[in-house]
Image (cartoon, rainbow, N blue to C red):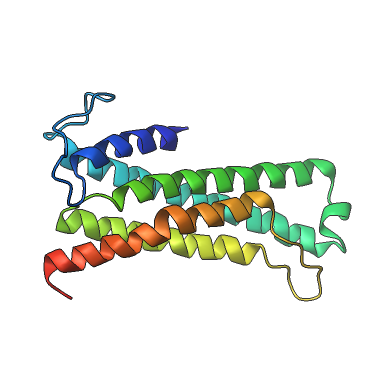
Length: 185
């Protein structure tokens, strides 16, 4: 998965652009391309990759919503759908949750960096876009009126927990630090 590699590289990049860290390093031992000369370019590339992943997730969510809408057209979503449609839906949900979790890991790395103004702005825009997508994913878990509501699956619950733990809390600290630096507090 490309986002796993991006996460590993952003973890190394985080060591170079550490927020308030006096012991930041000059280059990565794991990835030679990650160094002080390339850090700004890599931030831009990685943010672009997050944006591309969010576009893919939006497309996948649209496909999932279409599958669910067709499923809700029958009287019982899981029993009246053919097995291959249920399997496709399950694989698509799994891919969405897995990709979303990977995006959270990458975005989380950025919360620990001291980003420049335009980079911080782009990061915050992408994070807002992710949260909007997360809201749409959450909304897709709600059964339409008149249909039985099921408890969201464990994968969805785990994705939501990882998002809260790894992204939401550190994001508050990132914004606070950014406001301190800009003097807008």
